[in-house]
Image (cartoon, rainbow, N blue to C red; front, side, top):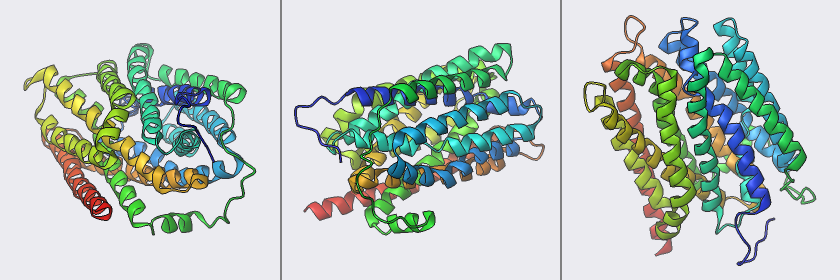
Length: 409
């Protein structure tokens, strides 16, 4: 169990190293986000097939996130992170060398299996922070995530000028460099001598964790939030292509702007806001901002409101998700025992992966018209369906907050 005196500094060396590790990992991942739909279109993929391609990665994360989370509780965070990052690099290479849509699917499946390591990285942060600093630590995770999404999409856009496969090879190289750095300088955070309780099967663990009403509520909120956000994320490159005529390069720049705002929100403002207002209020505020943004953005195009409207709507994406997502993971971490951080956060990431697996498939069908194309109506249909999901999320978040207030009174 991690202990920290009141005067001990927050940004310790292990936290700095895991921050760099997450950043490099997400830099490669961020390069894929704006490029994958365009790359799939090189193989004549329809919106439905693009949705299934995104879903394949997340289905693997859903099945393997709790496995890797529990494994990291037993054998340590370091080896799980090392081998999973190596696997991600191999997956990127498979996509870069792909000569068919089936090969891209294979690379995404392998990447999803080995990319189910976010819960392990979050558990590492939980190991080296106190409960009081947990929100700040999860904000740091989000900051590394955001930095990856600043440089990743922009780098992918620039590299795509020399062909769509090149960014995938660069992402693979970054993964191998990251694994090498992790192997030589990242210390283990788990106290492996601590006796853990007997483990049950993965499904049993999931249902057992959800017996806690408050943890179940947080998991449901996270599932719905990620589902709605993933619907936007999958559709965004197709939206910018249709409404603004953007290619991978220009879409990458917009996503880099979103990442910059996310870094400011999660790296600087989140800790201050959480200490002043508390995480439940941040979840409510962030979900509401996302809801308004999802309702408004489909009205924005090159002819209507233009680039300024797009940047304002994208800012709503960054601020809303930057408030709600890390606040939820912080709350979930605080409900779990210190020796089960990996399992608890693995359950949360499993719920997130399930949401990311379902939502792109749904998005593919919502975006697809009678001639297998995207149009204004299908874009509105997708964004507004996501907004309806956020409305349900908001109701659950308010209920969670009111229950907390009742208990405290």
